Amino acid sequence: MQRPMDPVLAARDLCKTKKSFDALRLLAYAIVFAFSMFMYQWEYQFVFTDLHVHARIASTFNFADLHTITSQLAYPMWHLFVSALFQLGVPIIWASALVCALAKVAGMWLCLTLLTLLTENRPPRHALTLAAFFLMFVTGILLPWFNPQVYRQVGSPTVWHNPTQLMVTLSMFLCVPYIAHTWYEFERRLPDQGDKTLLPWPKAILLAALLMFSLACKPTFMQALLPACALFFLVEWVRHPKNSRYFGQMILVFLPAALYFLLQYLYYTGVVVPYTSGVTVGITPASAWAALRSLLIMAAFPLFVLLGSYEKGLFKDRLLVLTLLITLFSVLESMAFRETGLRNGHGNFNWALMSSALMLWVLMLGRFIGSFTAFWKGEKRPPARWAFYGPAFALLLWHAYSSFYYVAFLLESGNAF
Image 1 (cartoon, one colour):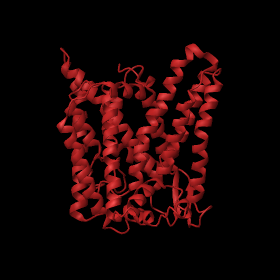
Image 2 (tube, helix red, strand yellow):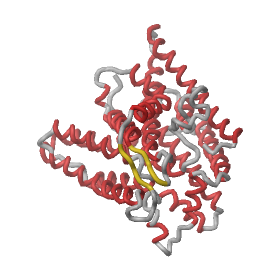
Image 3 (cartoon, helix red, strand yellow):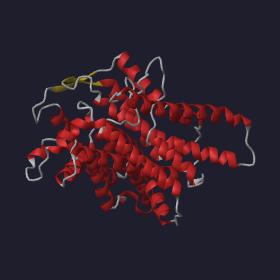
Image 4 (cartoon, one colour):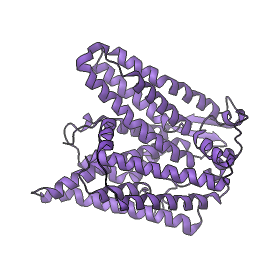
């Protein structure tokens, strides 16, 4: 069994290791950056895409008039970066593409770091580089009779038209591992501190800041993260009833994010600022199937790996448990919530499902690479294991082909998404 890993401590140890020059890795980063610059400038030509709309909003920011910024309190982070470049004289199209491209490269670096930690740096470096590179483009599987446009009716772990989703993806790769770290830190301190166990306050403050950063990028992921963490810590509180000090501390950590999230919701629904939009709640058979179908199509490979590699003690991995809870709540959110008014059909309650699908991809691809490396290097290679690895590789290739098809479809058809 792959032992549970504290991602923050493991990353700290990884940073201390001596690193050699890696031309392939630098080339992969360069390709992601260059292609992203091209793709986002190409997307900018479509005036009704999210990229163009958000870029126009960013161009109206005035740092001498804070109202221009606070009026967009629901998702200011990407706009702030773009606006800063724009006011320094960078054309808005270049400023928008540059921020998006840098976010893509940062996302690849975070993915590569997580993959390296999950596999304990055992596979060849080029395999991990190619895996992280692939994750920057991965989409759901193509079913020509159902989703010939790939993204439509399904969603995608990666999208090319929405810059705020790109930013919230970065926050996800920071928040979820750090939340797992706070639990492992509690477990390490528990034997010595007992009922008085607390997270060091600098760590607590850092987690609160990461949560606020995620909300400032976009509140959609937090719609799944907040209930997932509430359930996670509630279950652990029941298991550790004498440690109310720690769980009370975690409530304080999440409280600013919960209040900011509530304020964003009031902005979104037009309570604070005028806007003709609202939300209806209710699960129907059609909405339930649509959400489950989207997850199955977007995450066919990671779900197969999760089922095929299940072993006793798997759920001691708190990073995995948190990710599965986030996925559960993102599916329920997609089933239950729909927008009305001007945002009718915008699908903003599906973004968390796309984010959680990408997080599943990172964890399960890391588990798969580590497992296959051990299998391939082992003295014995049980033929029965190919019953798992064969279909897994087939699904992986299907996703890879679909990812290439999706980009080609966008460019050849002139479709925005």
